[in-house]
Image (cartoon, rainbow, N blue to C red; front, side, top):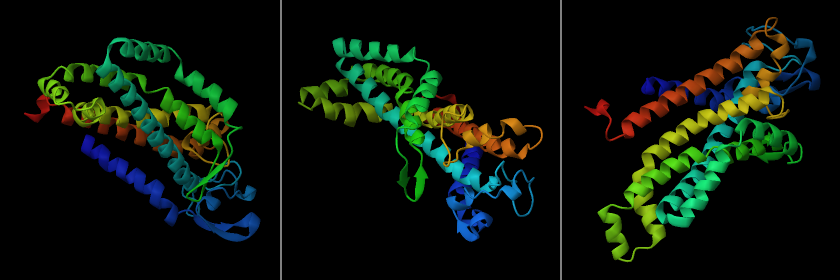
Length: 294
């Protein structure tokens, strides 16, 4: 299943990163100009609003005449980017806190673990909604690689990343606590090896399996979290598209225009399922005690 899921994820990634070169192009009637890329995805022709799937618009059009196919492509880029960068923040913070707490122990461990436990009781979704609403309009838009990103994208990445690292930190801490008592770590200390070198050269490489699995599953969790808040209208803001805010605009048309929610919802489902299957496969493959290797 992990191999099949990997193939499915590659297809999704190819669709959202290469599909724009093929599908996101056409004449924008309101400005009477041939446009490509995100400009086509944001082109609204109200005379074509709520059109069902057709050869001209394979996924149909939305409430203001924008092409759903093009918006799923560029919305997917935002959703997947949020998942990857939020997971990266999660891994950096979780590995740092867990490694420091487990290696130095004593009062350092006590302080960092109390902070970790305090963070665990903060409801992530509530905090994400509040901060995305409060800061999303304050952070200015940014232009990255030709993409105009609303400030809400950066806020969502940081909030998800800084509220998801606690479980990884506890896993890394537990591994470091057991590894630092082994003979080769004692020999390294006796030879005068620095603490930083012991942590990054000897301990973390032997903790890489849970880190990789956690990072993989963190991507799918971040994609779902972004979809939650965007569906509630406080996540990624227009003109930036995401699969989540596409679902938000489809709420009033669930029965009358099902293509509005079907295609972005299907892409969220497929992406999250594929990533979860890959994470499960990596956990089995990287576990030296797994019986599946026999």
